[in-house]
Image 1 (cartoon, rainbow, N blue to C red):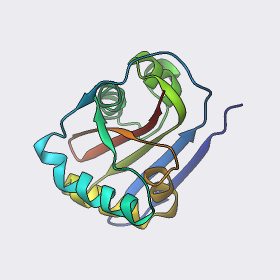
Image 2: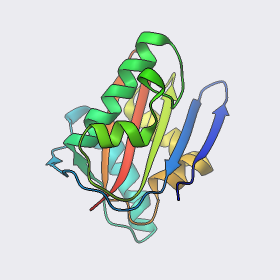
Image 3: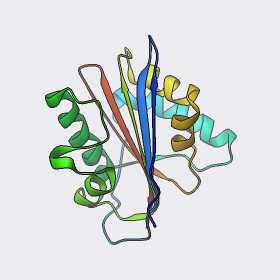
Length: 159
């Protein structure tokens, strides 16, 4: 059974939204990748919050980076700040299409208007629903992409 949580937080300095899917285990890949230099501090901040919650740190995933980039490209090219992607696809569609092996929940956080990935991460951690995605039990991989003031983070549970 698939559960979808969608929330929108709009504020002067922060525009962001989040979605989460819970799925049964599927086949696919989980290819760990190094954190891009521009995201190291943001990841450190999010992993510190995860450590405080007793969770494992997030590891970069090539497949989730691809899923985040797909949604980012769609948002930037269309101006539609939404979790609905190209051709009406969903987060689950994008994650599967990127080849990620989903072993549990996957989530997506969007942000717009922050000056850096650090600021986007700080905003997500201050928002209860975004924070819940970052601190989702069982998640262990992430993908993050940004362009033109937009940020997309995909978080997932590997098989």
